Image (cartoon, rainbow, N blue to C red; front, side):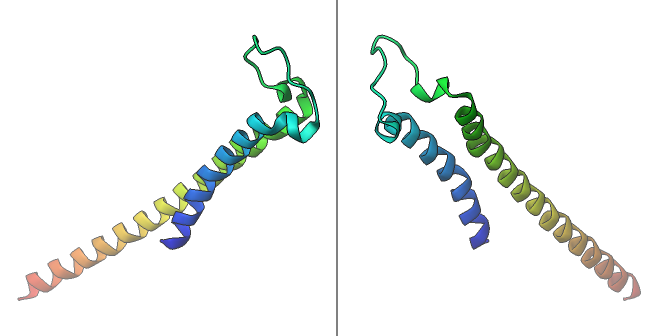
Length: 98
């Protein structure tokens, strides 16, 4: 359960941190001057390769992590359901013999 919590935290913290740092630190990272302050945009949107890489990094990787977590949760729930059904069958068999 501890590893699941860590993976969930990472899958939320990683993209949030990445995106926040890039939005506020882009001009410091690249040394570009800031654009017109009357416009509401981010400088890295003008770089298609970087923008695509960023999208893969903060959306698709997070999506893959979340889907793998849900698959793991599904497998555990299914295993617990099978155990419960087997336990119920044994209980019914025991009670019918008595």
